[in-house]
Image (cartoon, rainbow, N blue to C red; front, side, top):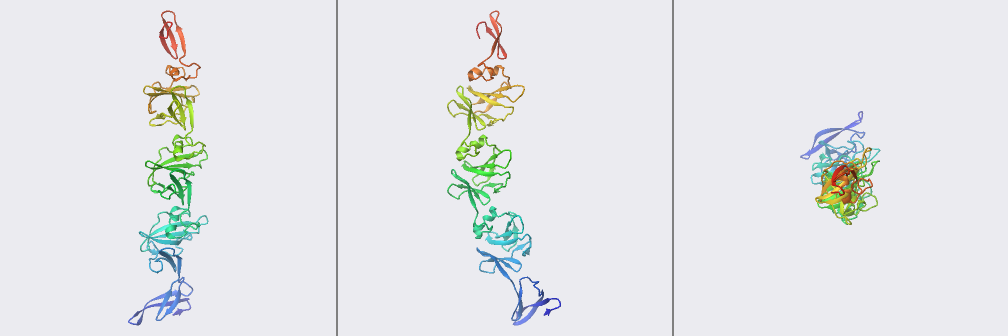
Amino acid sequence: MFDDSSSYFDVLNSSLVNDNAEWTSTDHVPTNGGHPGSSIVQSGQDIEIAHSTMVIEASGAVTLSQVDNGYFLYATGTTTGPQLKYDGAAVSAGQFGLGWTPIGVEASAGGYQVVWKADGDPYTTWYAIWNVDGDGNFTSNDHGWLTADRWPLESLELPFGQNLNGDGTLGPTTAVIEAVNATTLMQVADTYFLYATGTTTGPQLKYDGDAAWVGQFGLGWTPIGVEASAVGYQVVWKASSDPHTTWYAIWNVDSDGNFTSNDHGWLTAARWPLEALELPFGQNLNGDGTLGPTTAVIEAVNSTTLMQVADTYFLYAMGTTTGPQLKYDGDAVSVGQFGLGWTPIGVEASAGGYQVVWKADGDPHMTWYAIWNVDSDGNFTSNDHGWLTADRWPLESLELPFGQNLNGDGTLGLTTAVIEAVNATTLTQVADTYFLYATGTTT
């Protein structure tokens, strides 16, 4: 059957019917190896092709075998199982370029998971995870191309019984980020878990329904602390790659680790929402060397002390740390919030709560003052006088009850000047107003 001139031979395929050979087809096969990996074997009345088989891995319940140019997913110890297919056709070795080769397989609820590896990229090694159905048909690749440290890949190593990424560790690599209090923040592969301290029980940190992963948000954003909250957890993040400042953010996440909100946006190191978490977290989160909020007394002359705490203000009863935070529009007032150098300089209790005096020295032409009325919870309620210059009556009239020379004119209390005192009534200028006194009195 050999045709020497063409270097091909004919293989007659036969079957036995009633002990008689019946030829059913003819294969025209090249003698120079054009049927890769096969050899010709004569067996009795039949001429058959013997296929080359190579086991790629047989670590678990499913064996991945290459048969000639295709791949089969056999139940381990058998040759029973489907051929791997893509777009309805058998996958062949080298089909996808870049050295893509399947390296592991195990059964899944819907069929199989097949791990692929590509080592033809000079810059990195890639991996991919196929989902295939019970007939070996590709159905999806949920994670795209993965680097060696990615969670979807490392999480398969224990169920596959293979060190798939070749890092020498069977299973995900782990590193404790912090374990100060009741909750431990752990990096597992390239994701994060919120474990009850001393255990590996707790949710994976997620964003938009998927595991949050290292480097996902750019700018060096990394979680640095976590503790349980009433509704789940609070997670503090730090970004250290901005050349101008270090940023922080506070995530609220639910009990399953899902991001739900970030109430404060990006925070600098001195911000109250960040520093307020340091004591409950047991961490100096902003690295300023102080565990807890930094504090500075602005004034403590009479019965109420005005205190800067982190970048906010508190109105404490003198000698205590009891009293409300100063608020505007429902939120804590922060240093620099109103521009122009506006800063509170004095406070005292009033019938309805407190009065707070502000000063702005950022105007090159004038120093301004303002007087807030706030309720007993520290909420701004009104400013009855608007912006005031240093000589205005509403400002100077508060100096004696506040015990402060608020306008810095060197006089504690109201400045006065007699305009005329000729007869029974004296005309006196008091601050920037006028009083009509019975001569010889301030009545």
